[in-house]
Each structure stands twice: as C-alpha cells, then as structure tokens.
Image (tube, one colour):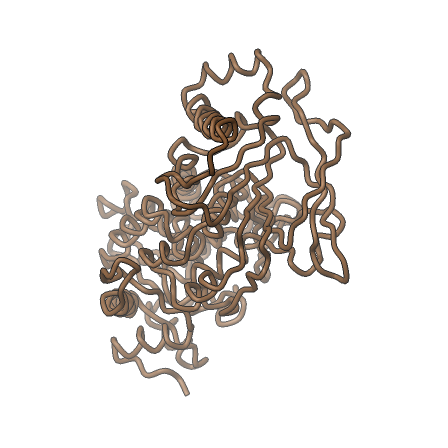
Length: 488
C-alpha cells in the first residue's frame, strides 16, 4: 500500500500496555516509518481513562510499576494514536461496526476476572476474588464504592504479585496509603478495617515463590507490622534444595530474607522480648507467611466464612508438589483467592473458555475449525493467557504486528467500506455514547492532580493525586474540558 492511497485503518480494543504497544509497534514498523504504509489507529477502551490494568490493577503503593504509565503516556501523547474512551465493545460498538469502519481490529482486552478455585466453600460470604478487591482499592468505576473489611483474621491464597499486593494493602495502615492516589472512599474503608492479622498461603516452599528480593523486603515495610514465620516452612527444605537455592542469586536473596525474619523472631522469643515492627515501634498488625499449604476447603457457618482447611505439602523427587496428608485448619473471617486471572469472552469473537483467551495463531484470530478469520487479531493476556510481564507483552506485539503487516502486504485483508476517519465519531454521537478523548484524559489527569494538591497526607504534605472514581464525574471532566456536550 503506497502513501498516496488512503491510510490503513486499524482499531485496537483495550488501552492497557498490550493495546498501546501493539499500536506503537505498528507505527514503528519499517514500512510505516519510510512512508510505504500509511496507517490511522483508533484505540478504544470501555473505561473513560486509558492505561487499563496499569491504572486499575496495580497496587497504589507500587510506584515502580505505575511508572509504566509514563511510557504509555508518552506514546499516546504523540498524537498519532487516537484514544476513544468510555466505549464498550459489544454494547456501544459491535464487531460489524468495526469491520465497516476499519481494515483490521486488534483485541487487547487483557484478563480482568479471577481464575476459579474449585474447592468446597469458595462461594461463602467473605470469600472474595483478589481481582475484585484490587479493582475496588484502585478506584475502578465499574465496582462498588464500599468493601466490607470487618474480619480481624484474613487469609490470602497465592504467592504471586497480586497476592502480595492484596496482603500489603490489608496490612498497611490507611494513613500510609495517603501518600498514594487512593480515593476518599478507599481511605475511609481501610481506615475502618478491623484487620489485625493477614495470613498468606502458598502451595510451594519459600524457594518457589516468584517474589523479587525487593518485593519480599517490602512486605515488612508498613509501620506497626510484624512479619511472622513458621519455623517448619524453612526446616522442611532439604540439603539438596538448599544447594539449588544458593546456586540462584534471586532465590537465595529471597530465602535469606525469610530466614532473617525467622531468626530475629526466634531471638526475641528466646530473650522474652516483645515483638516490634521493623523500626522498633509497637505492633498493630501481623503478616503471617505460610508455605507448603494446599487449599482444601473454605470453612463456614450460616453461609459465612469462619476458616480454611489446608493440606501441608512437600516436593517429590521430581520437584513437583505433593500432599503429605496432614490437614491444618485456620480461623479466618475472610478469604481472598489470588490464584491468577482469566480472560473474558467478547461478543462474536472466538474464545477458549478453558484458557480464557481468544483463539489465535501468531496473533491471528482463528475460528473453531482453526481457520484464520481475516482482519481480526489479538495481543497480550487475551492472546496468550495471564502470564508474563511487560517484556512479554512487547514480544507479543511484535508477533501480532508481524502477522498483520504480512497480511496487508499479501492483500489478505478486505478493505473497510467506510473510509472517513470521523465517521466512527458520528456513529458514537448518533448512539449517544459520551466518548472521551486524549485531550479529555489530559484534563482529567490535571483534575486528579489538583484534587491531590488540595489535600494533605498523614505528614501534612500535599498529595500527588486523588483518583476520581465515579464514571459520570470522569466523563464530565473529560468532555467539558474539550467542549464536548454529553449526549442527553
């Protein structure tokens, strides 16, 4: 396709890293940069603000991860990708609409739901998916404003990043989180929380965690928090396993952190000293780390969580986890499962329910018979499942865009009937969809920063930002700033 022809029109559904990197990868393609291929890209999101799981799925006290927003912001701020927020695929726009207006569509909707944990009692009141809790404390406008935090003893099932985030947020005092962008309703909920003890359970041992050394150390950072270790969890490690641990720098550092906590705990117990937090202050909450625990059943009475049963585990000769037959019960008032994410099905798009992904081959969407559906592509977690971090998402984008460019060059794609780039805006306006734009996001961004500057954290310093939670308010601020009257 030469630059004299009409631009190739691409729609990307999802404005998280997978969507933004897919769009950016196409714009950085050699044919695009040298003018052989002209492209026009619209990036859609069902939420009024961009950045997807980075804005609504990462703990607010993780500024290093939040820094990814800076990179995404830089890409979208160039002006060569048009952002259209508050537009839901399947409701506001159908697949038929997109095929009429675009030459190709990339689905990059991620994985938002909790993976299932099929054990008895998981449906009891007080049993929660960690993803729902994360969406609440991150201010996702599609979730309730309040969250019940009346349990003193809370269990978190999982040893991944989400489990750590949930455990850390539950363990921290609300005042500490005022240094972040949490909205007022989240602060009020955490301030009133009855939590005194958070128990984190992992199926494997300390050496099999996915934590980085920094993430492990951060667990002990909250003021007033004591980390409690079970001596059995480290005593269970065999000498052969210790050799493997010492051979891997990351693993060795993480296990040494756990070992250090246990040694300090045992030293204080032997000396009859009262436990303290890391700064020597009084203990207000405890974080219990439990390894070698396989969830068996959520216990309850009258429909409410009262505890949880686990089977202790060990590694077999091949390094796989096996049960020991020893059952252990814990009294808990609430349980959060953080055992992974699962992608959601999209209307009229082929879907593998078991894996939670759009069926595809090298990013090309495929039907039930394995045949490629021309013009439809996938990227990110909805393509490969919820594993890997940003680096894997970028690699995904390279593969998906390579498939797209190959299909463009081969003439395998049908041309969209509607070539006017603003026709999609008129369609949204006709349907009274109050879509938001990048200029609208810039206004909302400044509005949230202004809310922070007008408020103080626990140290009396201005806050950097306070998230707006209500969708209607997000849309109003975004649209009023760019003189877009909201549809009646």
